[in-house]
Amino acid sequence: MLPTRIESVSGKQVRLACLGDGPPLLLLHGYPDNLQIWCELAPQLAGQFHVIAFDWPGMGQSEAWPGGATPVHMADRLLVLVDAWKLAKVSLLGMDMGGQPALAFAARHPERIERLVVMNSLLFGDEPTSWEIRVLRRFGWNRLILRYGPRLVFRRAMRTFLPRGIRLPDDLRADLWNAFRRHAVRRFISKMCAGYQGTLPSLPALYRQIGCPTMALWGEADAHFPPVHALRLGQSVPGAQVSLIPGAHHWMAWYMADIVAERVTTFLQPDR
Image 1 (tube, helix red, strand yellow):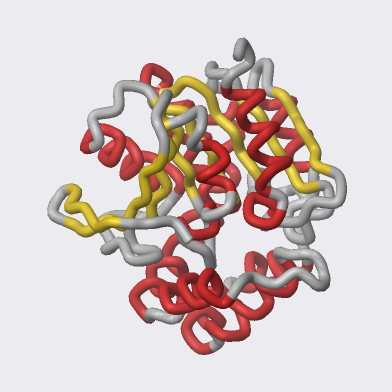
Image 2: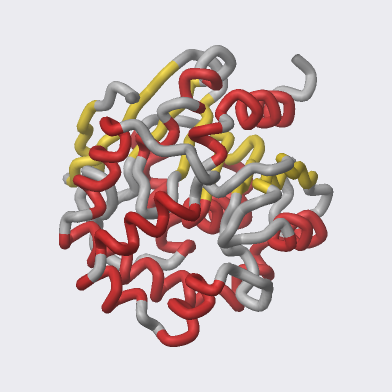
């Protein structure tokens, strides 16, 4: 598990973990996870980078901030954090619902980003997803299920984000669940899901504005967001690379951290 601390940013508490020295690299998680999903990957990246993993405001153990919850709003919050930590330029690694804000940040703040890696995210609303994601999006059941069935959502993630036979250790599972079970966290995630769904059609226009080196790093066996999202991102962002990891599932950043670390490091430091 990553050692963490609580900082105050704009009067709100933010939980974060900082490791290593070198160019700053921010890790952006999705849901139902929090910063601890990076507990295997972050130490492997810390030999080359100053790694900062944090709980998004409203998720994990970070307090919610006022305002909307679209990827653009999340990118604006990311800028506030980058400014608070006095980082002139950063590289970003975004996974799941951390991928879209990373892309929006790169498009809207090109002077503040070095390189960008996006993993296993819903990037195009008209591309295939798992049946669960499709049903939740089509009928707007996110709010009801998140409110009344958090344990069902969490167990389904454990079952579909990892290969059969691989389980999270008890301490990591407990940290993720103890955050996700909180009503305030699920209320924010419900708001975020609605905001993401509403802005999905407009996001591809932002992708085309990205000028920094970008890589779509994807699990070939992701059960929810198949590699077509990576391939299309590669066509949308000028000069973007696509890297598929054979047999990798959604939470490859945890159980395949060594392979992910090697590909991320190679991309972020091409001249090393």
